[in-house]
Image (spheres, rainbow, N blue to C red):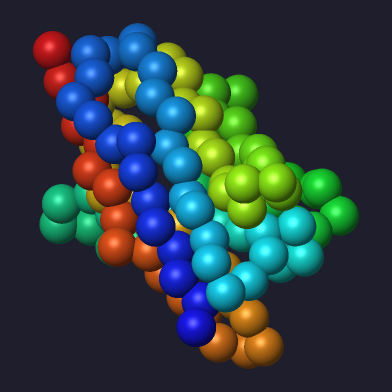
Length: 115
């Protein structure tokens, strides 16, 4: 059974930084693509970043240059480093992967950017 557990969400002031973690079990972050999505209140869930097994990555235009996705294979964990946070980054952030055609999501972690 694949499980994804996010952590690291918090209340932070504009311009601040956070690092989110996604601990995976039942699959290897080194062999699957791993993604981060977010959902703000009243909005649809949107893609944020992806890291594929070969090491390539991609970012949504709204976070490019501010967010960075990485992984620690030894810990089987994927990270999302978020810098220069803005109020519009406020959302629940979800970790995502697909294994043998089935989609998996974590429970989400709340990020609130406010002064």
